[in-house]
Length: 94
Image (cartoon, rainbow, N blue to C red; front, side, top):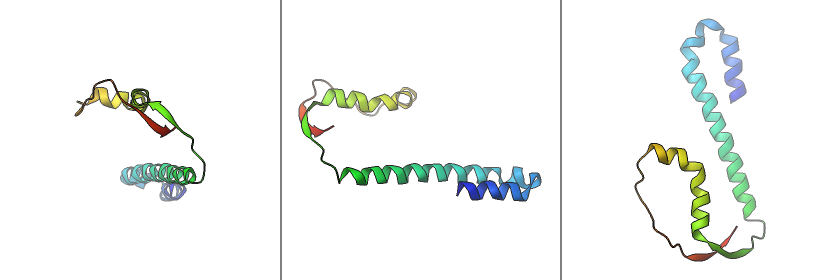
């Protein structure tokens, strides 16, 4: 998809470039998201074929680690929910 978009823009030349730039950008962005989705789904499918040891984990630690990639988004928006400590311990696969 990305390669096709690039070839199309080169074939049409500069005159069409400005008119098609938004479509091209959206196409390339969509191809990137689709690639990430496919890779994530393949990785998720592989999880069903391996043994995952179950152990007791501290839920507070898991939640804290899960929120790290979202810190910037959370700072820009108003959180809609909150939780209080202490979290319970539970059995999970790491």
